[in-house]
Every structure is written in C-alpha cells, then in structure tokens.
Amino acid sequence: MNHYLQTTYADDGRGPHAFNCWGLTRSARHTLFGKPLLPSYDDIDPDDKPALTDACKAVRGTGFHEVSLRPGAIATGWRGQCCVHIGLVVQSDGRLWVLETRRKVGPTLTGIPKFERRFTKVVYYDD
Image (cartoon, rainbow, N blue to C red; front, side, top):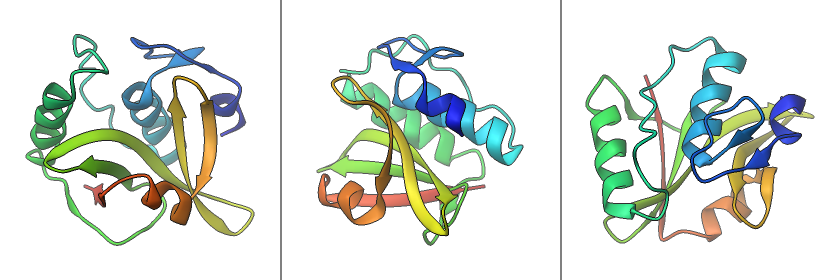
C-alpha cells in the first residue's frame, strides 16, 4: 500500500507513478486484493461526472453488488444522481480506511467518517 501513497495525482493517471481516483482504485484493488483489473476508462475526463457515473453503472452491471463496509470494497461517493469520486476500502493498523487520490491532496488514507461526510451518499461495491 505504501507504493500508492507515494504516487502523485494525474487527471489521466493509470499508474504506476501517477493516478486519478479510478486509476488508483483499479490498480490497488488488483495488486492488494488479487482482483481482476477493471476496465481502464482512460478516455473519460475526471471532470465529466455523467460519464463517470455511466462507467460506475457499467462496472456494477458486471457482477458487482452493494456490500457493507469491508476491505477490498470500492467506495463510491455520490452527489445527487452522479458518482463523483471513488476509492478503495483498505485495512491498516486495525482500522478501515479509504485509499484515494485527489487533485489538490494526492494519495491519502482517509478515515471512513471523513470520507462519507464529503458526499450526499456513499455506496460500497464488491464482486
């Protein structure tokens, strides 16, 4: 996990040294939890929230379902009907966190309550 915390944010980032929120979640889920790589969606602009929402719905349609908070789940942050951000639930020091990256902040481990306060709704998904 330390590798991800030492990367930087990039709008089109798919790694290994720079990521956007989708790229980080996609890579970390594969590396840390051994899950198959999700589609890249590298053609979607991070500011195009309707396209991000469509991508989220497309991934959900491939066998993902809503789950309770647990390591390996994808945390989706919603404002109204739009998915505006995602991260990955990880465990460190006996606590659950969201591994995420943002433009002005870069990669961080964010506490669950703090992550959830930033959105009108947070839904966790896993396959």
